[in-house]
Length: 310
Image 1 (cartoon, rainbow, N blue to C red):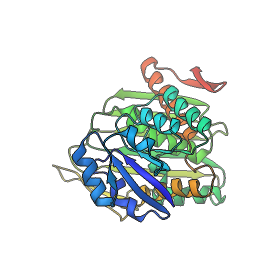
Image 2: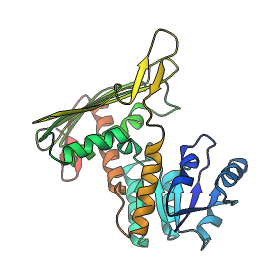
Image 3: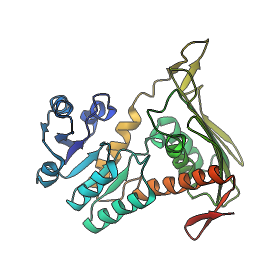
C-alpha cells in the first residue's frame, strides 16, 4: 500500500474526485495554504489535514506526494529531497532548468518522479497510440492536433499547448528535429514540428472562443492507415451564437485516475513510471523553441540536445 499526501487541494480538483478509486493507495494527508481547502479534502478522502508542507514531508507515514500546488516544481524538489516519491500534476509555466533540478533531486534520493501529462492518458489517445505501436497504421507520417477553448485562466498560448507538444513527442517516440511556430498572441498559436523520420506534427491552439465549452481533436496518418480521436468520438461542439456547448462523449475524468494509478503501480512494482520527468522536460524544451520561433520568425533545429536557429 502506497501512502500518499495530496499537496494542493483545490475544491474543483479532479484529483480529489478520483483518488478513492486508485488501487493500492491510501491517502494519508492533505496540505494547502488555504486551511479550509485542506480540511475539505481531508474530510472527503478520509485523511488528516496537515498545517504545512514541511510537516507532511517530515512524516514517516508518507511514502509519496501528489503535488498539485501553485509552486509545483519547488514543492516537487523539496519532496524529493525529503525522500518522497513525486507526482507533479503539471509543468506548464516551469522551465527546463527547474524540471532538471527535480529530476536530479529524485535521482539522488532514489525516488520515482512522474509528470502529470494527462492528455496522453485519455482513452481515445491511448487507443490511437496502440494502433501506432502495433503497426496497424504503418509508419507514422502526420499528427494533427486542434485545441480550441474559451479563456486560459491567465496562462499564455505556449503554456497551454505544451501538453499537446508532449502528445506529438509521445506518438513519434522522439524529439522533433525542427520547430517552427507562428501566431504567438495570448489567444492563438500554430506549431509545426518536423521529426527525424520525415514525419510532421501540426498543432493549432486558440482560446478566442466565447465563454462555454472547448474542443480537442487528434488525427494521425500513417503509411498504411489513419486514426482519429476527434469531435465524433470525444466532444461535439455545438455553436449557434452565444456560448459554445461542448457535449462530451463519456470520457469524463478517467484519464486522471489512470495516470495516478500508473504512478502508484510504478512505485509498487519498483519501475520507472510511463510518463517520466524527461517527458515533461522534453515538452518544455520544444515549447521554449516554439516561443523563440514566434519571436524571431525563424525555425529552430535540434543540435546536440538543444534547439538552435536553423
